[in-house]
Length: 110
Image 1: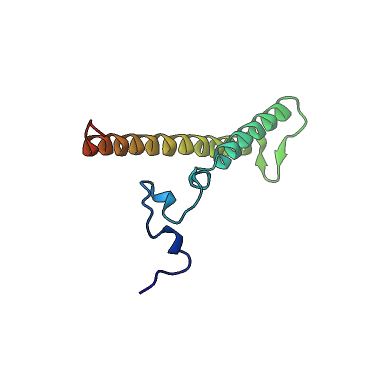
Image 2 (image 1 turned 135 degrees about the vertical axis):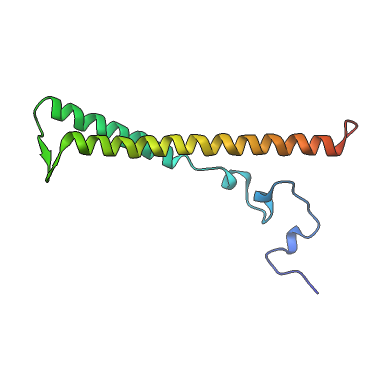
């Protein structure tokens, strides 16, 4: 039985990383920094809302006070940033453990 057209070029290759399973470039496997940047933007927006409230430019947004909106937006931004950083740290620990396991399995002579 012949391999499919997609997997045919990869029949005799072995990749250690699961992201390379389908021949994807290593860059495609990298995590996006977009959620963290969105979190930073939300925190800046909350700071600008608080500044506008402090200067008396805005009293409320709809039925809600500006302080409540600013706190909510800032909270969502902080959650995005911290979650992104924690996931990156977790992936770094898993990768380090995999590398250490691969080195122990391969032995010191290789």
